[in-house]
Amino acid sequence: MSLRTLRIVALILGAAVTAASAGIIALGATGSGALPQALTLIGIVAMSGAIALAALSLAHLLRANRRVMQTLDRLAQDRQRDHAQLLDQVDQVRTALTEQSQAIHRGLTWQLNRINGEQKRLYPELEALIDLRASLPLRAPLPPLRGWAASPDVLKWMTTWMRDHQPRLVTECGSGTSTVLFGYLAQQTGVGRVVALEHDQRYAKQTRELAVRHGVAEWVEVRDARLQPWQHGDETWDWYDLTATEDLDEIGLLFVDGPPVSSGKLARYPAGPLLVTRLARDGIAVLDDARRTDETRVSDRWLKEIAGLDRERLPTDKGTDVFRHLLG
Image (cartoon, rainbow, N blue to C red; front, side, top):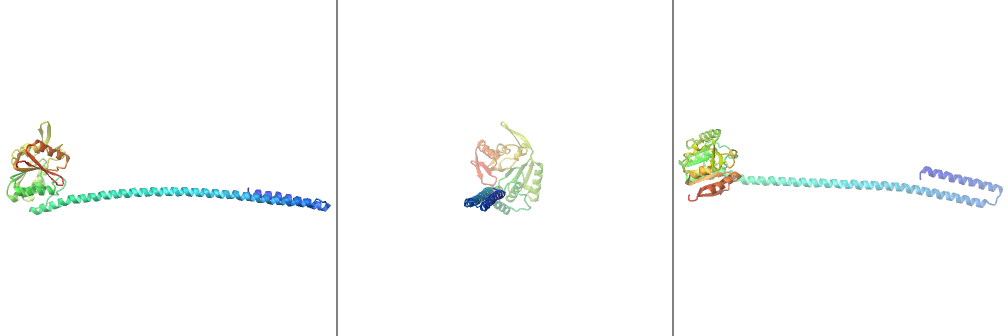
């Protein structure tokens, strides 16, 4: 009930009491014996009005209190909903941060493992390079021994073998830094010569110039040998011009580091039936990059198809397979 309604009720009760009072006054003036009853009636009316007003006021307060409680309930529900949303957002942020931290940890662990692996792999390479430079009287800088070039570890192994066995003929499929290092060993021992087969005239020219700068041109011959189709059974390869290999017999050291893989599948296979079979009795053939799939297949085919071969696998960076005669 509104305040206005309470006022109207109060006015009505007041008018009733006033009317009753006027009647009492009139009765008193006439001397009627009904005056006590009239006074009692007025008291009852007044009390009833007061009770009614009190009841109406209480009902109004109760309704107002109910509205306040409803408002408080809504506020509490809104607060609970906001709190739940906040907790959900906090959980989402915590989950995202946890996943990000785990991803960062995995990435750092992978990087650290890779760095450790590189350090373990590069240390033997650096050690081999230092030993290689210390063992040879280099007269000029060497090109980088990475990428397409032979790695220091296999070069150190071959130059050590050359120093110990002093082969009369070193033959190389491909040319470059290794050709010059072989020239140094031939010059040091005063035994043998180095013949490199090169299909690219630019590389052949660069290797000849490198040999001149290092003062070993007298012991090194770089032959231009363009790639030509060569058929063996039902298979065909692009391999060095055979006219460049006609005089290569009794090979003491054969280093197979070409042709490049871009020339075709199993590009180095022809060196087996064409040159490995010409090894001297105590000669060896060295196949570089033996960890690669094609070179692994080439190595297996040589071992299977060429009679009397033994294979040794060296733990070099790129993988190296060494072939020699079983009775050599």
